[in-house]
Length: 325
Ligand SMILES: [Zn+2]
Ligand SMILES: [Zn+2]
Image (tube, rainbow, N blue to C red; front, side, top):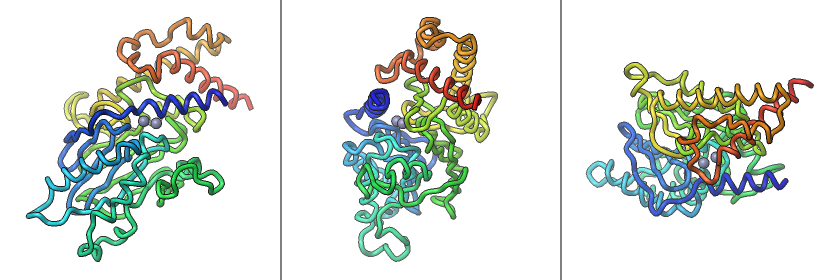
C-alpha cells in the first residue's frame, strides 16, 4: 500500500500549478491552457466551450478567467458569452479533473437567462464526459471519493464514443486507450482541426508515467502512442500536420510522438530481455536501460528514470505472470 500511496502523491505533485494560466493558440478555434496542472484543450466558438480536462481544483478561478478572455475574443458584436457545454476527462488524476466542479458549474452561470432555450441542458452546467472506468475508480461501489459534482455525468464503455453532432463545426471523437497511463484513459480527436489531446499517455516533460495502482501498463501506453500515430498525418515527410497536445509540456507533431513511442518501445524491449534472463530489479536498474534518453527526460523529480525503470519492470513482470496463467 505504501507504494500506491507514494505513487499517488507523485502523480498529484506532478501537475504543479504555475503562477498563471497561459493561453496558447493551437489551430483555428482550438487553444491550449497551460499552467493549471495538466494541459487543458479548449474548443471555443458558436456552439460554446468544450474542454478536454479541467486542471487542478486550486487553479479553477484562473482557468475561468482565461476562458472569459477567450469568450470575449470570439464574441460577435458584444453578444453574451456562450456557455461551457462539455468537459471531457482524459483520466482520473486530480491535475486533470480538479476543475470539474467549479468550471462545470460555471457552465450554467455564464449562460444567463435569455439564451437557455436553444442550449439544451445548459441549465445543468457542463456535461462531464469520461470512460466508465474513470467513474468506477472515482466512485467505487457508488461511494464518491471526490465531490459528487466533479464526477462524470456521461460515460462510455466501448472503445470509442463521438459527440452526436458537430461542435464548433467539426466532429469530435473520444477513444479509450486500454490500460495505458491508467485503465480509464481517453484521447480526444478534433477531426477538422486535426488536433489530438493525448492526456498523460504522451508527455514532453518526463518518461511515461505508468500508474500501476490505477490499472496502467507500459504496453498500453505504447499501444496508445501507436494509435495517436495511426490517426495522425504529417504535412511533409515527418513534420507538421496533425498537432498533438500532451498531458504536460509543449504542443507537438507526429515526429515528436514517434520519437517518444520509439523510446518507450526500445526501453520495453531492453527490460523485457533482462527479465527473461531473470535479472533482479536492482540489476536492471544498475544496467541503466534508459541512459540514452536521460539527458532529455531526467528533468522531473516527481518521475525520475529510476522510478520509470521500476514501473516498467513491474508492469512487464505482471504481464509475464499473467501470460503464465
Ligand atoms: Zn497529469
Ligand atoms: Zn495523470
